[in-house]
Image (tube, rainbow, N blue to C red; front, side, top):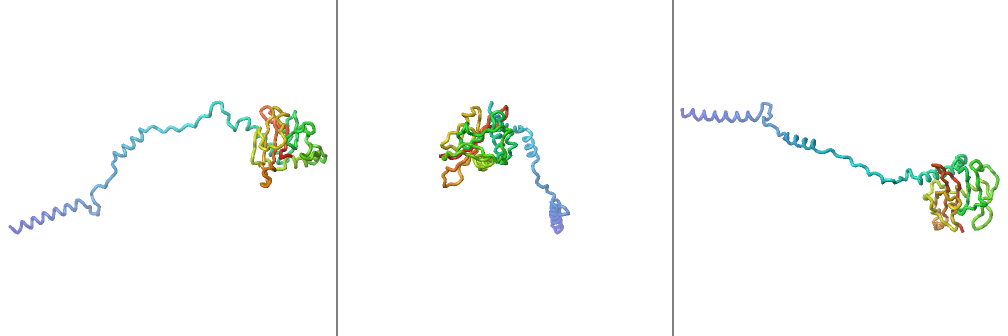
Length: 240
């Protein structure tokens, strides 16, 4: 009997060991210990916090100042647009469209220099502009520094004293203030008191001339209802 007790004790211990292994492993080798999972309470807390948060309010754009006039809709913008259209017409040599921009009462005056000669300058009604084919020589004023009369056909005058540079691509544009100033005084406002003017300015072309070869095209326009009409085309440059 004494020899049986150790055998029974050994069998019990072996049985316990086998039962422990069976509890921790499944026949397919997977464990029966639950895998770690996120605490569902943390998800519930986060969801509640998000649901209780106040919605974001979009930031409103600042309101424009009361009574302010934006440059896109102001009278100066309309003036510059009218002048821009005229410069494009001059670039395209479109005399038919040019006639449509001329003030019907004042007509269109051409001046080779900034000081407009009200006596000897040429003025044409909207329907009376010469053509580029017209071979008649007209007197447009006097050459600066020489005093000789400027006698040219309309085409030759246009090429020398209207669009002798690509003014549509001028680097500087000014309104009611001249950038190009020489010895001659601009008298456009004196002849046309209610007019405004737009200048297309080149500060110079050759550095060795130190800016003395600047040129400008000045368009003088008068208000006509909600529009602007052209009354003078002035060529401006350095004068002696």
